[in-house]
Length: 493
Image (cartoon, rainbow, N blue to C red; front, side):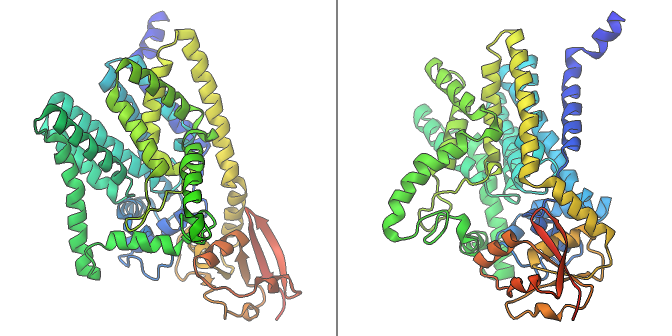
């Protein structure tokens, strides 16, 4: 019996137990489609799958640029069918990839199996990573490929290997087509390379080789976009257009998240950069104190002159996320409104926190890890409350059980309903397309889905809608309500 116990609880098997626990946790807390930006990603993926890319697309200008996420989802549709489950496959795979990356990266820098296992465990139960393991957003995949690039760049220095530097560049290349967070890392790497060049007075090619793939990506896509749209800088044009289209999400004149008059600009900048953004980066409950622990451990390592590159990675990225600009034409501080915007910070936070925990005795380590896991499960549950997962599941079930009903709704909600229906042709959903739309034209028995929060956001983006107060007349009756969505049925003409 003792031999069997030693065999199956041998240290080399622990990583498999961690991965198994991570997969089970992600399945238990499966979020799926949350009627948010994933509606745009899923629709664009479907149009790519149908070889009609972005046909009749209405939404954020920058979303079609995240082509790698759309391609993975389209491939998933091809393999697993056009359904909600298919949109969850690759987020889950890359989430598990984040755990393995934490494990191998920590093992590479410490040469210690136990320390690597702690890093894997922290990432396995990081609440934001659990949450987005089954939501089709671009933040987690982008961070995965960025961190893969940094892992291989580190190996290229340690092994003096051009091969690893090229692999690093390929990872950076792939990350851009998920989200442009690589530009933050690219900026840090340029500064680091210049510093090393001045300090050592010798040319080191590892960083330039890796960074050259970012330039190669921009060149290739620039040529493609020039042929398609006559705009070599189409990506940056769309990013700027997105800040206008979605003005209240950016630090812009008149924005609810920025400033109202020109004289308010600098006071608003000070508040954003020195108060609001630092709180968002370091003091979010969803991060379970890991940013603060990483900050403390950075201070300790600075004093001891250890892991300076890891400190630079964490501190440098934190500073950029707090005060960098989101516009290339003028200073526009980033609005760190949502916790998943900072996915690239999670790995260095986990690695520094792992080194902090590793300093304690075994029993204290165990207590800290247990507290962390309990806190993680609690925060993941709070994420499910934030996204109204239970109510949205009721809404999905209601829609599926009434699959023949004709539904009128806004384009944003329509994308979600179409996904729940599997984009089955002919689509039963009809778009409310302007303020001239006559709600009274609905036939008896037809439905209208209305979510005030969505409509208010779409109005801010410039879309026009009719007066929905007509839904409270005797011609309509409220038949279902969940997750903020109201479903009305036309009862009389």
